[in-house]
Amino acid sequence: MKYLIAIADGAADLPASPLGTPLHYAHTPCLDALSTRARLGRTCLIPSGCAAGTLPALLTLLGAPREACGSSRAALEAFGLGAPLTGHTAFRCNLISVHDGCIVAHDGGGVSQSEADALTQSLSDALGDAAHLFLSGTTYRSFLLRKGAASIDAPAPDTLLGQHAEAHLPTDPDLRRLFYGAHKLLSAHPLNAKRCADGKLPVNAIWFWGGGSLPELPSFPARTGMQGCAVGGVPLVHGIAKAMGLSVIPVPHADGTLYTNWEGKAYAALDALAQNDFVLVHAEAPDEAGHSGSFRDKVTAIEYFDQRLLAPLTEGLAARYPDHRLLILPDHPTPVSLRCHTADPVPWMLYDSRTAQAGGVFEETECLPLFDGTQLLDLLLERNSL
Image (cartoon, rainbow, N blue to C red; front, side, top):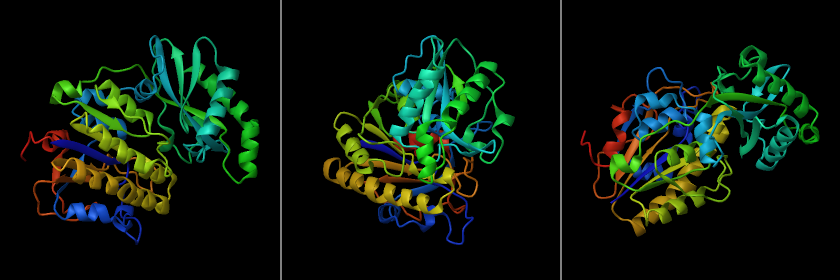
């Protein structure tokens, strides 16, 4: 038996449009076909008191204890990239866009990987030293490794869109110095002159958040007795997987954007099942579209998830691993009207190739029964019959 989880990050939404939610409006023939014979429900993967996001959601889903959900996001992401964390505190260092002092884009207005690499290198050349190491991540997700232990009080930039950056800067004087130095440097960077000439937002500031040291997380193989792996395009998924004893399967050009290597993720997951009983496949693009406030891009991301990831994945499963169970869900909503994460319930679907359930419609609806998110993994692995 093979077990899989496929996550459409942030795909759930609020019915704020006459068209319904993006999940309702999107053309999803694969999801529709699966849902006719699957078990469906709703769940919330965000523990009470935790800020909504992928970190607490994935940890909850994979069986980590409640207290782990406050772990350092930056340290896990840097760990996923293979960064040298010993003796350092890791901080997320988002490449952002600021206009008239306000944060207008948490992702630098769609900065490319090559642009992010060049800008992060400039930060390293101008502001890096023996105590400060700037590292490029995946597109806008850069990092700062600072010697010593420390935490910061700044929120994620996607929760501050439209707000004045200075009002939310960390109190740490060293990080404030780096923020102002980076703003001066990036504002004058020739790459941003070209972006502005092309009608794009300038990547003219950085934002520190999510700081901390690497947490100890429970071992997935020890808890389940299974070898497993993860396929995704963002450092957080890689870091959580590695910290929980799951192997990470690299996929070329998987970057968490709308243009990620969707098919490559599907084929990587299928190949990985030859040596593993469990695979987690993560797609970031619906979440990014929600943060950008684009209904159209979110619909497209969901359709790509359905037709370019799920379709080849389920076809390959039927041909190569006929006995399988597949859990499909968002980790949390990222409503396009709010442009940030929420802790509202999300729909889930559990498909078992051996049996047919009553089926239904895979959408955000209160008609679906609410299920405890901490038990979903055991339900998938047939250790819970509820």
